[in-house]
Length: 153
Figure 1 (cartoon, one colour):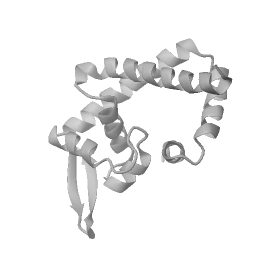
Figure 2 (tube, one colour):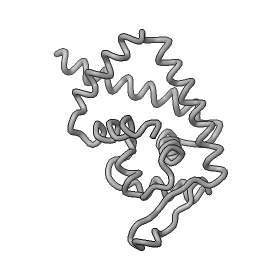
Figure 3 (cartoon, helix red, strand yellow):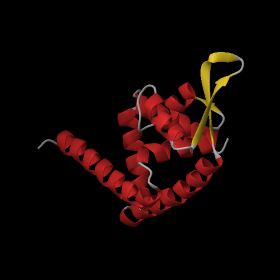
């Protein structure tokens, strides 16, 4: 196995294990990791257009319409037309969505602690730099860079 192939499998394995851990932590809330990402993005950037949300999601490439429709259907997200541009959809959290987003944030902290227990801070920084380089110019890389740049706005 080449080092590049091993890296590909290690990334895939780490993603699957992290997603499995996250899904298990979210199960009591009856949320999927993708739904949780929508709620957390809205908590940070609402009100936001569907298109802008799509630019920030790592879990979904392109238009997140179906994913958002599921969250609207469950009463977590409110979708309305933009009064200034009726072609544009604006999204906000409902009160229940806001409560869930706070719970998701706490669960994310537990997941980050799980990662921090397995890797030293210097290892995390090194991996982050390498993976940023690997994802440079990709849709996922751009979504992560946008979210990082907007953090704490």
